[in-house]
Image (tube, rainbow, N blue to C red):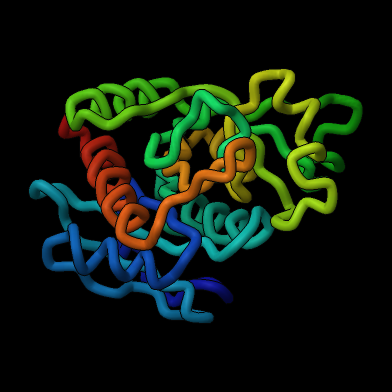
Length: 237
């Protein structure tokens, strides 16, 4: 147990899906997992363990932003023995090539956060996804007929960018496809502790075109994403 998690050792599977929203974690567990049980309720940052295709898998909400995610991922690795993380979330599009409903597989994750600066000093660390997980997710998306893009994303501490799309101009010029709020910290901790990680995000709104999903489209797209993430988590590709 930790100050943030009242699960017992052994309550988590080795592979964990990481949504930000606790209610999305609950929805994933109740919708997709067999014999799901709640293993963490501290601060309502809910965690569950069950099985998918007969194999154990967990889902743990991370809360919003990199500092919150870093707490849960650090403890899941170092206290509970988790070694595989798949973030399942939403993102905003920074490229016209990425359409709403498309999956974005974060190959690398830049950030505007200062969270790594004390650690890396003069170096700009470039955290990236585990290649095996990324390749498996691409294969699973192809099998499911879901459009996907693999490449650079950015994890920002700022949701309401004062300069709007202009604030991301340099990132766009360097091929960054999408923006979200957690992946860079996830990849950094996975690298630090020799774990595997991948961020899979559904593009729900495009900052370039203004296109966005309505509620029904958002829900069906999230279902596709979660099925793909679970297939990757249990190795059923």
